[in-house]
Image (tube, rainbow, N blue to C red):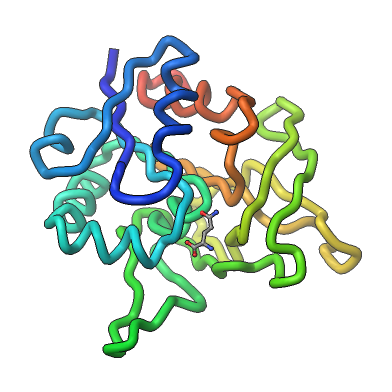
Length: 203
Ligand code: GLN
């Protein structure tokens, strides 16, 4: 059984560990380069992407994670984790010293952080994920605003009257999976199960 790690620098990594364990999938925290070397797949939790970016560089984890992504390691990013998997961030955070937020990249997409507006910091919406209907929780969620040709749209939402065909909130490119929302906080297991299957080569 592939070993799945959860990046545990900041954010709701405990909820992801619990979601995986509920499905009978052993999971471990990844905080160091040594931890990373022990896992076959990685989950990037929700939280604050600019903080995850900074800490992962301070801990010397950013480059090793990028290398593993380039080698084909399966990765699932939720919310801030989705931002970390995007090749491009439309509105990166700028630190006081002028440093621009970076991502690990891997998915050929541009994401917009906090895309659903300040007045709706958080909302729930029903959506379809690969044949499963689920209640998704969005918390200052990003949106994929541009996709390269190899990126597959899995879920969209029509959260407002001007959302037309729907806004892109779950995507996949090969073994990389990203959702704008947080399945780890609702107890819905479809997405973690999908990722487990993907790590086993079944999705
Ligand atoms: N807005 C956050 C960011 O930029 C993401 C929020 C979340 O993960 N719930 O990272």
